[in-house]
Length: 385
Image 1 (cartoon, one colour):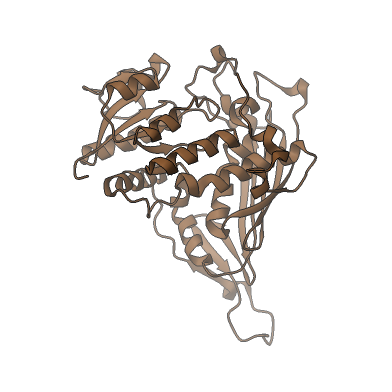
Image 2 (cartoon, helix red, strand yellow):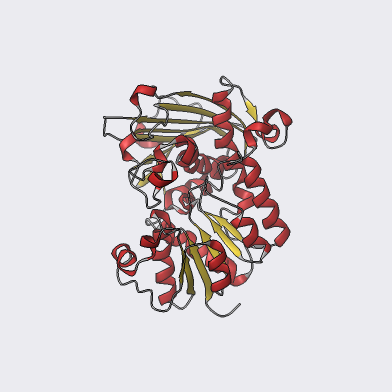
């Protein structure tokens, strides 16, 4: 294209502001022109608020809008970032694709499989570039693990995330006036977020796919929150356990808790291939494997088993994925994107099917059947509001 990529942003909440900060930096480098900002809540578009989150930011002549239609008619754009709650889509992604605009869609792309499938079909038909916000694929350790595991036989990946319900942060969508939590923490609410597996665990799910390939089936069981233990719409289950089966073999375990009145978070992650463990140890990534004569004359000591995998310096993953998207639009080539829309559909279907598995008593759900079989049609359909 040659000129700076003209970008609009829809949704100036927590995640939208993080992306805008990157776009502001890219604009200073001449790579981007911020063409327009859109948010239904006027306070989210105020110069004072934007500058509070993005040091040095100035609206200048950048126009602001409160609806998608106003943005599209009033701003000259090459691409749009969609940073809105996943249940609040009203066909804008599809219309943007049909208009030939390139897209950056935050995850999860939708809470409803049919709606996501319609988005994907429109994006494919239009031939536009679309990235999904799985920025964790750009983490130095995640990338190093991806390279190290290439060609190895996967056995198991495990994420354990013990968290507090209160660790959900306050957002910028005024959900209190829209039937949601009054404190604007919509991610703690099942209707607004789809639950923790869908809203947050999709990141860990996508990382497992980055390492082990696509997921074939899912099986899940949750511990629902007691109705007497729900405060301001915070009805996410106490605990989630999800098992994934990968097409090329191996399984994944995702274990998440959201306890109230605990205020403590901890976690664990580990990857196993057929001849070793790949462990995340602080800033280091270590492979524990024996590579000497086999069988050894005596059991090897732990120090000899530990091999540090070079992973490079930590990066700002939001900036990394933003730069990758802008470059893809500039070059009209999505070959270097690590999370295209179509390439991300398996992650979305896996977490949505996890909810369905729980609802159906822990049924093992084949993901190909989930996205196409009439058995799951009611679960895929977006309710008519």
